[in-house]
Image (cartoon, rainbow, N blue to C red; front, side, top):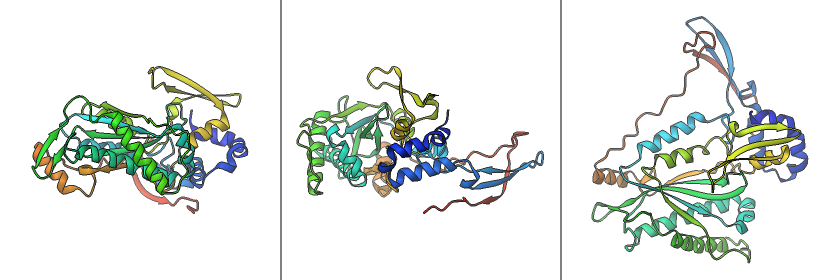
Length: 349
């Protein structure tokens, strides 16, 4: 079951209930998904030299919230991250905003999400540079998620970081001691102080019932690949896989999810308009980057990354990006040649 027919079927009900709350970025996502793989998104003229078959094929919309798009972009990102993996243990650190601040985050997304990234990265870098912890520069990849497994609004940032860092002056690799990166309770305390201070400096009101204890989770992530694969699922294709939408009956939509606590597969049913809002509320502001690299993994830290490679005696070779899948002839399955194209038939503005 795909999401586009659901949008077509229930769009009027959705606008009636949520139209006054809809943000421009969410409306743009709706428009993109409705024209995805239709002539409105542009067409390619392809030809098969084997059986002489020619046809026009509609293109995908390319919107990062469309469940049926961006599979190639996801694969390329994962390929690039795999090439940067080091022969060390990795950790997955998760910072979560408390419930009392979610409304603030929703109504001021660009500003609050940016502060979120800044405070998370600063907290981890300071812990790493502290002589009592590691006394080294670390690298990390941070990904913003705004949803829980049930698709409720639940902003949090996952950070994948190698278990060690480079000491610039001594030019050697310092390995994390023990089974965790840093103490998660101390991380949460420092992050909370930084984040609230930045909110206050921006002039935001901080609710009186904001808890004094926040949640930060730090887990061992093996050699890092499994964590990267998990994070790649939600980078470019929205927050729900269409395979998880299992029923559309009597105006209700049912989807399945895996409970984070028990690991058991469960289902959730909502009115169609509520389901569409549940999905669309996770559309990020236009141009906002969901994933960011820091430290020696940042694109501008090539010298530091080179030092890491020398110390660990590894060579990170970027290599060529994986090519896009070829168009195959529906009749004989031979590769088809692109002869021409038609521009998308819509006004991006």
